[in-house]
Amino acid sequence: MGSIAKLGSESHYWKEGQRVGVGWRGGHCLKCKPCLKGEFWACESPLATGISTDGGYAEYMVARMEVLTAIPDELTSVEAAPLLCAGATTLGALKSSSVKGGDLIAIQGFGGLGHLALQFAVKSGLKVAVVSRGTEKEALARKLGAHIYIDTNKMNAAEEIMKFGGARTIFCTAPNSKAISDLVEGLGRGGQMIIITFVNEPMLISPSQLMRAVRSVSGWVGGNAADTLKFSVLTHVVLMVEVFPLEQASVAFDRMMTAKVHFRSVLKISEG
Ligand SMILES: NC(=O)c1ccc[n+]([C@@H]2O[C@H](COP(=O)([O-])OP(=O)(O)OC[C@H]3O[C@@H](n4cnc5c(N)ncnc54)[C@H](OP(=O)(O)O)[C@@H]3O)[C@@H](O)[C@H]2O)c1
Image (cartoon, rainbow, N blue to C red; front, side, top):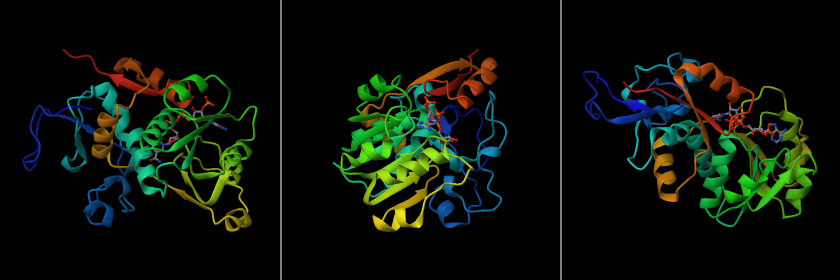
């Protein structure tokens, strides 16, 4: 997030001084189908750089013009920043799913992605169950619109979800393969589990668990940041962030990596 200090010679679409952001992107081969549609987060090039590009924690950065997103005046930079990745990802996953108004969606993990997924789902007319550990986050989840709160320390989440008829969709944001695998039984007939979290341990799901109730499990990455900003402005999405000065980037990073931050770390660069 920031404003354009200097434009490249061919960047006609943008203006110097304009407030813009750079969300997460897969790459920019400019040849594959997603790139040709402007969906750079899904670049299929084997050379796609993804999250491994250096230079994000800096006062100045070089960005390709096609990955910029204009920031609406209604949002402060601190509010807009988490929407460019956590927001775009969860709204993108929601749009990719088959859920319709009134359906039950379960959101596993109530952190940076989870608190936005909850709000996007509620504002899309869905019935939402939040699946989290402990009761600490229940009040906030309900305040942000959760209809059901399931504490996995006390309850079997899949059984609880089935008491409501089973979920049409389950979004998994918590990085725990066992917890994700256990939730498959909470999918109703034809239900779809969408995995948004990065986790490398294998899942343990039997083919018959999927076959019996025509369930499916898929993954999702990235999303359209511009659409997410518009949706968030129109529906007054609430951003839960902790703001740190750039000098405390490592503190912010540690709080993020240990899931202690409520709920997104945002680095603010002092002006002047
Ligand atoms: N697909 C994409 O494009 C994309 C984009 C951005 C991020 N991600 C990935 O998405 C994941 C989540 O990111 P985030 O920013 O939301 O992380 P986060 O803020 O740390 O939230 C994860 C939440 O999962 C909860 N959790 C952990 N284990 C759990 C369990 N067994 N049962 C229930 N809840 C559990 C944690 O809550 P407690 O510890 O309080 O229980 C935490 O609040 C990360 O792996 C991140 O890399 C993917």
